[in-house]
Image 1 (cartoon, helix red, strand yellow):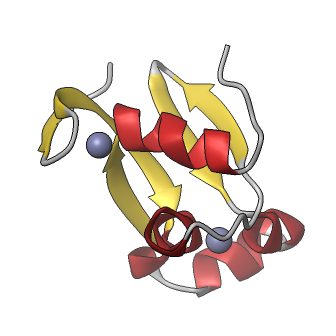
Image 2 (cartoon, rainbow, N blue to C red):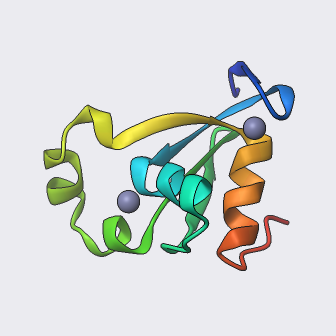
Image 3 (spheres, helix red, strand yellow):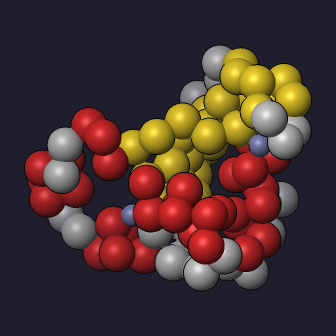
Length: 86
Ligand SMILES: [Zn+2]
Ligand SMILES: [Zn+2]
């Protein structure tokens, strides 16, 4: 089950988790890839650079590499990368 958070733009939303590079894309509008999945009802996504890393190398970047994001922003980031969340 996804947790809830309140977004300044989208209001009360399901909580998702993304890499910080996707947060950067939301800020500067530059697509960095959007590799998403849904694990136990929680949406997650990482950029192409993170997707190219082994799981070990990805985790070696430290816990700050992943940030919570509202589902509305998650969909916005997907759209910026031309990805459809169906
Ligand atoms: Zn990334
Ligand atoms: Zn939002």
